[in-house]
Length: 257
Ligand code: PEP
Image (cartoon, helix red, strand yellow):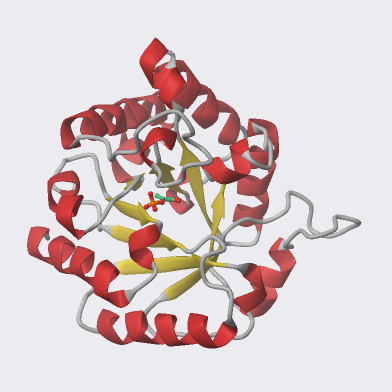
């Protein structure tokens, strides 16, 4: 089965002015008319009402697991609906580790996004220690089983496998050298993730769900990663901040299509 590539960006808190956000998004957007590749960028929620794009889809970086209420600082799924936003990241490692989010909370977010027809991009991934000790498969299995508990329409979900040790964030990796997964390691883990999804949802659905790789992906390593049969795109942090670093990844996807 051929699964169409998806390229996602994650700006985190790296762009902090609306004028700069608009300038960068417009530039990326203008290139996308040359490609037929589903592309979203997750931006700080404060920008979501104020930017509009043609080909590029916008995403939230997170939502709260309740629709509304006394939750200072959180973003409501209802605001995403109101702003016409179609995607949200859920369970990014920075949310799991820095903000101490649990799999149970992440599961509520996945279900809430789906309730409002917003595509949740469920991020999973093990730490360097969990990889070294070999417990990473159990960690990924738990993140999938609990994160997807009660989710019926997996067709609407995108999975992003992002090994924490590969994410270009020193705070998450104080004691380890940050480096992307090798294509072979990434493929082996993606294939494991797809097998767990098959156990949960059966073969047809597991073959159609897109599993993105995230962790220091950039033009220089994207081709080898994206060539792998179980890697269906990328979730890209640093290299999604500018057209000049993101669009080369689109060229690679096009050449592999
Ligand atoms: C991320 O934060 O999701 C990510 C993959 O970041 P980077 O590409 O910068 O490692």
